[in-house]
Length: 458
Ligand code: ARG
Image (tube, rainbow, N blue to C red; front, side, top):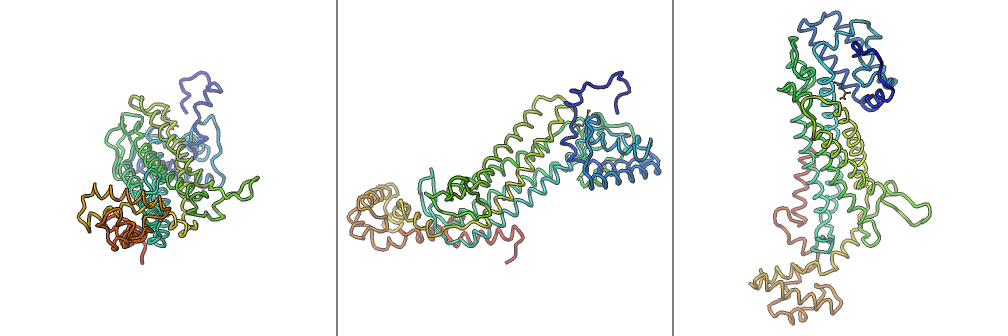
């Protein structure tokens, strides 16, 4: 394609290091779509004959049909997907194929194709996240009143509800969707017509090609347009943040499925056995989701490093933009689907959660708050009194709320029998009615709002 000034062909290793067809063949649909739009514009602007443009469009359609049926045949000497399509077009329609590359370069071509691909990847991520959100909301609705221990420092802190805990992940995923949506809005400008770096002297209509490809407008600076990969980085950063959330959820499932916790049993479909220990049910998919998040973050870091030292405009380093994005996309899709399956089918062990919510004096703060509210004790003093009550309970080997009123009164006379209304885990969660708090009534309100956000009726 560019051999006019060369006397010799490339060295074998040159060919190998230069070739991207092995991975950029995934851009074939976008490449053909953008080429069709480009040639239609060239004809409309009188830059190529209508007859040639028709032949090119028909040829491109045939290539698309063949690729759809048989995949993209790879030829390393043709470097990348753009040259594969063009070479095949020449075989099909002859010299007219050479007119397709008028007023464009592979630089604006690849920037356009890749934006289109990433735009679809963003839409897929959004749908995958929404599916997981639906699973979380539906399980949260079942467990809006299921009491479990809430942790800080992984130490039992205060009772919460499982519904509230699951909805915490709903909120994280809501931010992830919004990040992907922001990335999409920024991405949606068309580089096509920026040509190699400087624009073109042909009377192209960039507005028309932009709109035909579903972009909002053409990009405003040709140098920026061919060398900008912010859209890929935005995608990878959004994917990374989402993967970190999935990893935290995976970690919880792994902990919860362990025997000392016993909060959840994963379904058979989402567990694996051990070849040596017959009793085992391992949460491999959760572990792999936790592990894959590292690879997604790695993909993001890799493209950051690729881009950081590049002067304007295009450099071949940028050919390395695709694999990290493809990898992150494939891994994120798998992780989202796996987490959705696991959450949908998990058997949460409500009795076990309730038992542990009652252990560890998790309602100590409720006693302190009660002293402040009902007896006018300053919080710091109430904290101290409660500490003494905890000590007494430990000594007696009972939970705080299992102390008798006389025992409690021996710690501080101001404690009255009404304190038992807040000391049980159920009473404790019920009392946390502040906006965003764990009270079942609050959690149900948030679930109703989430259903609206997700477009679920009822
Ligand atoms: N395969 C190349 C890439 O992905 C296409 C652009 C090549 N441009 C060039 N000037 N050699 O980056």
